Length: 289
Image (cartoon, rainbow, N blue to C red; front, side, top):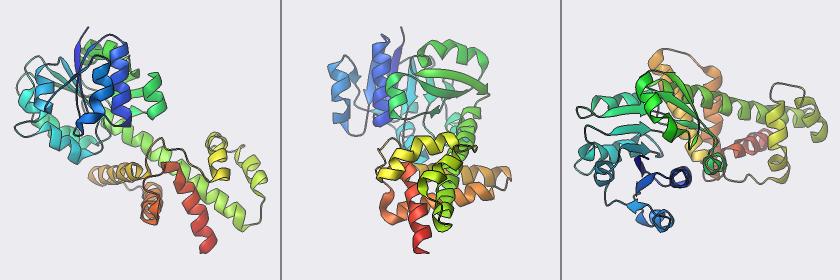
């Protein structure tokens, strides 16, 4: 079994770390707020004093962080991951940070240190169950070497060379945000045209957004959106999509509109609610227009 370090013990990272313990791996953990490691330490993990120390004692270092700035903070500097990584270390960047952040990290790797980018599709329930979809970018031999470890977290899919994982995650996220905002606008239109909500959902069930309409209906009707993925993080992801599209010279007016809705929802005070609360914001905004 490998010795694995997990850097970042938020809702996702802590559950992923737990899965690795359950799979029998030796685990080293680090988090800015040290108390977040307590439950894992009680189960047998070792808490490191710095990202560098965590990397120094691990074969594989997994990062699961909020954004590119957080990755830069824990990777660089005298106490960062790169300061502790050795020629036998493989880094696996599993956050949603975009291709540019992966390129920056790759350019700073010490000699002999390997890197995969492997962001995930899914939220805390999938992380706890080990059913995440994992988009892995990197050379085939390196991917195959670490598939047994990543398999404890979900279903790895090798999508191409380094950076392809980050690209695939943005493609997936652009569709998720687009579907939610289209659903919100469709319900707002139904309200405006006087179509009863029950009938609106019945109509939507026959469309390409039907599965999302069915899944989100209880939350929409109750006004309660159980937190799985914070809307503030969805806004960060929308901004990453916009930045990547601009760098690639690709115009995405629909994705831009979805990003504007998410930003407006956060500015309306919904940033700490689930990202699907953007649907309620769209409906409310249409009523007050």
